[in-house]
Image 1 (cartoon, rainbow, N blue to C red):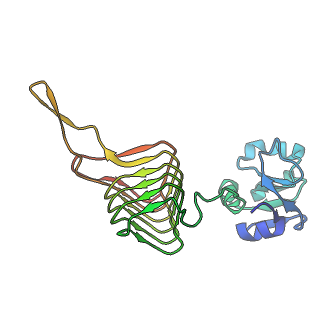
Image 2 (image 1 turned 90 degrees about the horizontal axis):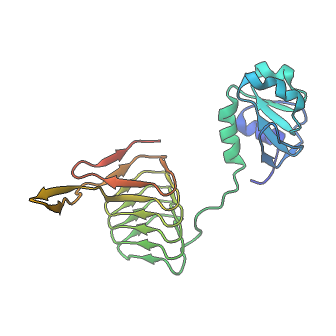
Image 3 (image 1 turned 90 degrees about the vertical axis):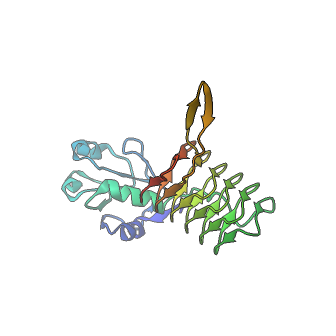
Length: 228
């Protein structure tokens, strides 16, 4: 969303509105640089004296800080949490892919749920199960028999090896590798013998993995990441 009325934002945040609800908010900014079209927030009352100099269209704050504020305000119990929800409401980040690109290579033995999107040059191998509303970015690789839960999104060039289980509403940033071999070797009289990594990676729901992260499978027991 690129803009929103302050009254509508207050309703979505379950906040008490003080001031003109018809003000249009276009973005979020820090208190020291926010302008007359932006909203800011005060999460630490130690800095309430800065409210007097704030040029923002409105500010999100606690009730105890309201007497120090001379601009429209949204009063909430937890301003930093409200900021998180506000950022989600106003987020304009595009999704990693739309529809299924003609260059995507998808095995006939893969199962795709409703409204799945797969970007250019992505590869989906046999036995893969993608839940409803999964988005696979350009250049991704999804290995055999991997399962990705509903609503999960993978940005460009993510590699997910075979037999990985990923929960719902996960967010995987670009360049991540999930399910690769751990570094296991045994020494046979000076010769290193590779130990195949026979387990997998199991991820819960709502897990976010940062860009260029590697999550290896273990030698025998699974690598397990709980719900986020």
